Image 1 (cartoon, one colour):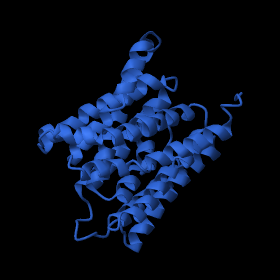
Image 2 (cartoon, helix red, strand yellow; image 1 turned 90 degrees about the vertical axis):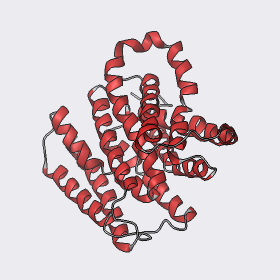
Image 3 (cartoon, rainbow, N blue to C red; image 1 turned 180 degrees about the vertical axis):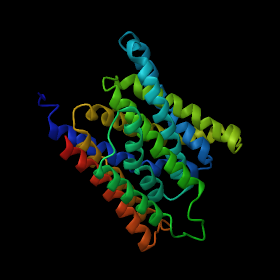
Length: 296
C-alpha cells in the first residue's frame, strides 16, 4: 500500500515533470556547443558531471550495493549507450527527429521482450510496430534544408532507442535494482562511450580549459540539479507505477521537446507529412502502453 508520499498521484506528477525536464535536455547541449566546445566534448562533459555527486554516494553506501551489481552492470551498460547516442543525436540532427526516433520503443521492447522475457508476439504488439514503422518512414521521407532523409544524427537517435529498450528489458527482469549504483554506472559507461567519438571516430582536440570553466555554472545547474534528479526519479517511480502508466507519462518528454524546439529554433521545421509521421510514432507508443494496461 502506498504511503501518502508514495501515492500514485504524487508519483505520477513527479514522473511527468522529470520526463519533461529531459525534453529540455537539448537546450544546455546546444548552448554549450555554441560557446565553442565541440558537440562530442559537450556530450562528454555533461555525462561526466553527475559523477561528482554519484561517486561519493556509491562509496559511502557500497556495502548495500555489492550484492546486486551484476544485473546493474548489464542494464547500465545498455542505458549508458542509450544516453550517449541520444545526446549525440540532439546535437547532430533536429531535436524533434532525435526525440521521436528515440521513442520508437514498441519495436525494440517487443523484440527484447520476446528474446529475454518470454513474451508473446500478440496482435496489439504487431499493430504498434506497424504504426511505428509507418511513422518512421513518414518522418524521414522529407528533406530539411537539402539534407538527406536519414543523417548520422537520426542514426544516433534510432540507436539510442534500441539501447534504451534493451536496458529497460534488463530493469524489468531484475526489478529490485538500487537506483544509486544503477544511475552511477549509467553515467560512467556513457562518459566512456562518449570519449570514443572525439578520440577515435571523429578526432577532435580537447577544448580550451577556459571554455569549460566559463560553462561550469550552466553544466552544473542542468546536469546535477535538474537532469540527474530527474533521471533518479524516473527510475524510482517506475518501481511503483504500472509500466503502462509510466510509458504514457514519459511522453511528456516528447511533447516538451517538440514544442520547445519548434518555438526556440527557427530552423526546426518539418513538412506536414513528417508531422504525420511524428503523430504515428506517438500513437504507436500510446497503443503499446494502453494494450499492456488492458492485458494486465
